[in-house]
Image (cartoon, rainbow, N blue to C red; front, side):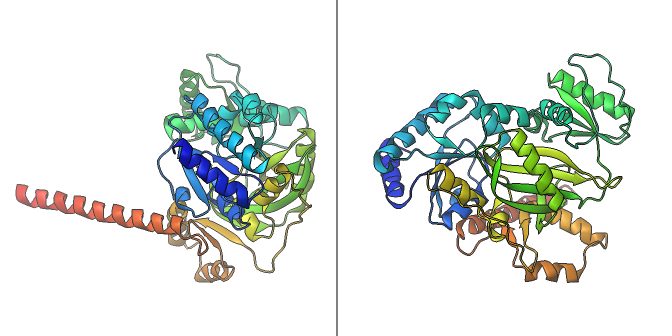
Amino acid sequence: MKTRALESLITQLSVRQASIPVVLGSGGLGLIRSLGEKGVWSIVIDDGPASVRDFSRYCRRITVADISAAWDRLCEVLRMVSSLALKHSGNPPIVFPTSDYILHCLAGRYDELKSLAAIAAPSREVILLTLDKVSFYQWLMDHDFPCPRTVFPSRGGENVPDTGNISFPCIVKPALTFMLEQAAGCKLYVAANRSELVSCCSDLSERNMKYVIQEIVPGRDEDQFSLAGYCRKGGDIAGYVMTNKLRQSHFGAGTFVSGAHVPPLLTLGRRLLRDLDYQGIFEIEFRKDERDGTYRIIELNPRCWSQIILATRMGVNVAYQAYQDLAGMGSGRQQPALPAAKKYWVDIERDLGNLKRKWSQGDYSLSKVLSVMSSIPVVEPFNLRDPGPGLWYLKRKIARKLAKRRTGGLSRQGGRSLS
């Protein structure tokens, strides 16, 4: 986006709203829509290809190539946005990170970024602690928080350590999971036996990645929960929701999530956030241990999470609450609404495979489908108020189907001619 066009955009947004949200990273559709429904438009800065989010009526995109290597260019853009925003509204922009990759980049230039914008994430120290799984699990154990049984191999050790009371299959998780995802397409490894454990540990050592060996907390697939919301200074939870991850990609992001009400999560989460002196948007993931009923902390995401629009549908607009607080508008305390009908969120693209598998196993009935539909679920990326992302998604799916059919037709013709 050229300077003149950017200035025109900032001027328009500054006239209509107190501050300008700047969404950094590849996610954020639910965040953008939650703010948009309150009349707040966002600017997106990203280095990846176009995604469904970029077609939302509530945002405009600025592309900065290879953010990790061109952080100076990103700061230059933010400096321009900040200068124009201060000129027209008197308030700096508010940065909303949407990925661990962006958070890691942000932490490296935190002080500089803090001078340009308010940040809807915690301090640099808390970001680095929670992103680094090795450091975070050690911190949890040192502060007597329940977490999965974990072994911390020494850096550079030649032999795979004794797993102690951790049985197979077990998890081998790098300190920075997003780095493994960029390199190998997965955030962690699962080792079914000793041989696989040796292979997983060797792979991470060769990549020069620190890692932990961790138990898979026993329980049902559905025994995963989250406490998510916004904290003001000092770990004071201003608004929150609880959710239940009913289906997910392999040890990854939720694809089908519902609202929930699990009081122990709030007690545990409140203590964790206060001990960290946390301020910003958060999502704490828990897994219920079937051995003793303990809710064990799996991770803390110090950023916006994928299902943040579900919080909005549950009556707690976490995104707007963060915006109000950081824009100096004040933010009243919001308690979660407990609707008579449970609210659901589904990522249609990623959940189709999981749903087909459940259905084929006889684990999903028509009555369950009707129950979900009667709650008027959030079906990502579709939204009647913001149709652009859904229409773009459908257009892309149709184009891919047609291209696949053309390719398949050519292959079949080739086969017949050879016979």
